[in-house]
Length: 395
Length: 157
Image 1 (cartoon, rainbow over the protein chains, first blue to last red):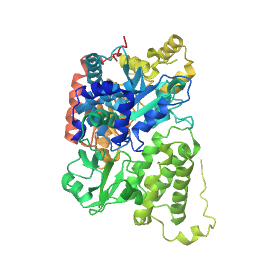
Image 2 (tube, chains in turn green, purple; image 1 turned 180 degrees about the vertical axis):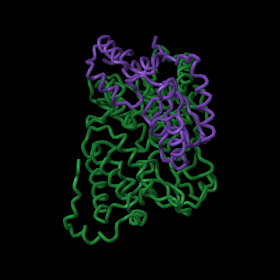
Image 3 (cartoon, chains in turn cyan, brown; image 1 turned 60 degrees about the horizontal axis):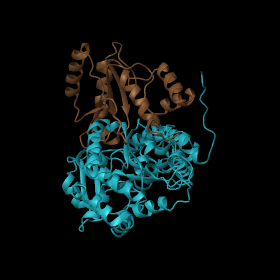
Image 4 (cartoon, one colour; image 1 turned 45 degrees about the vertical axis):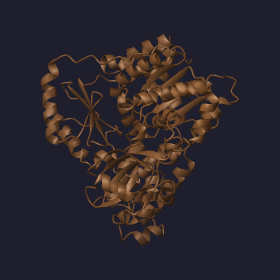
C-alpha cells in the first residue's frame, strides 16, 4: 500500500534542503488534496495561512485525528501502522508554516493508541533535530462527533464546548486563539512526506474503509475510478447486496457492480464520498431501518448550536419512528422530505447540512421501502388536509 | 491563553483518570486553579459524552452503536448485557462493578460487533464471549484496578 511507505525522515531532510517555497511547489505539482472529504488542495490551504492578513505571524497546526464518521477507520489504520510518516508530515508542515506548536486531536475512542504515539513523537522529535523548534501535543477528545468539524475542533482545543462557529473568519485567518491555523487530516499529513520523496507517488490513491454486510471488511487502497466489481471481488458480500451508504453523512445509493467509484459517479447519485467509508447493505434489509439508525446518530450527536440541526434531527427521528411503526401516511413522507431539505439548506455547519443526506437519497432511490409502511386508507384524507381525529390526552 | 498547560480537555481527562469521574469538588479546584468560571467548566464537561460526573463502576463498557455494528447483531449483545447485568444502558450495577454505555462509532467496523472495555477495544463479540468476559471480570472485582496511564506531556524544551 502506498500509504504504508516509510520515509524515514528523508522527506524532512529534503524539505529543509530545498526550503519552504520549493517544498510547497512540489506538493502543489503533485496535486495533493485534503483527504478529509473536501478535496481542498493542500498547498493552497497552507498558502492561505502563510499569506493571512492576521497581525500574528504565528501559525498553529492541527492534525485532525477525530475520525468520528461511522464506518470510517482509515486514520486508526495509519495511526497503528505508519505513525512515523504521519509525524514526519507534521514536522514538514511545521517547517513550511514555521509552526512552533502543533496539535494532534486524538478522539478518545482511540486513546489506547496514545501512549505509543507519544513515544514515537518523542523519538522522532529527537532524531529529527526539531525538538527545540516545535512541540507536538496530543489533545484528547471526549466523544463528540462534531469535533471533526474545523471550527468545532478549535473550540474544543481552546477548552470550550465543541460547537461549530460561523465562517468567515476562516481558520487560516483566525483560528486557535485568534491566530492563523491549518487543519489537516491524518491521511493528508501522512501523504505529505510520501508525495515529496517519491517520484512515483500517485495522487489518486485513496483509502477505503469498507464494512457492513460483507465477509472481508477492512481498510483497502485503490485508485479513484476503481470498478465496483473489483471491490466486490475483494470484500465478498455476505448476502445479496442492495445498497451502500457513505458513512452516515454521505447518503445511500443503489449498488451497481458495473459502476466505477469516483467523485463524479457518486455526486451523480446526489451522494458525497467523504473519506470513502462505505457501509454495504444487504438485500434483506429495509432502508427505513438503516435511516433510523443514522437518524438516531445525528439526533444524539447534534451539538445543539443551530436550530435546524438541534430540533430538526429529533423531528426527523420521530417521523422515521412513526413510519416504522406503521402510523404514518403519505403526507408524512412529503413532510420528511421537506424537512430534510430545510435542514440541509439552513444548518450552520457541515454536520447539520449533511445530517439528512441519507433521508434525501434514500427517498430518491428506495422510496418503495418507505411506502411499505404507510397507512394506505388514510392517504386521501391526509393529502387533503382534513382534520384528523383528536386523541384525548388523559395526562 | 494558549499556553501549554491550558488544554482543558487534557486537564479534565487527567482528573477523570484518577477516580473514573470528575467530581464537583474537582471542578471547583480546577476552576480556581486555572481561573475558569465553574459554570463554563460544567458546561464543557456536560457537552462531551465521555466525561462523567457521577461515580462509575469498576469497569466501563462502551458498546458501539454504529450502523456497521448494528448490521452485525450488536443489538443482541446489548440486550444480553442488559439482561445479564440487570441494568439499562447508561446505568451502573448496584455492586459498582460495571457501568454500561452506548457510544457512536468506535472505529472497529472491520471487526464487528465491538465495544470498549475501559477504553480498550474488544471486538468480534459473541454472546458466549461476552458472558465469559463478564464472569471473569466479576471474579477480578476484588483485585485492585490498575492505575490508568496518565497523560505525558511532550515537552517543548
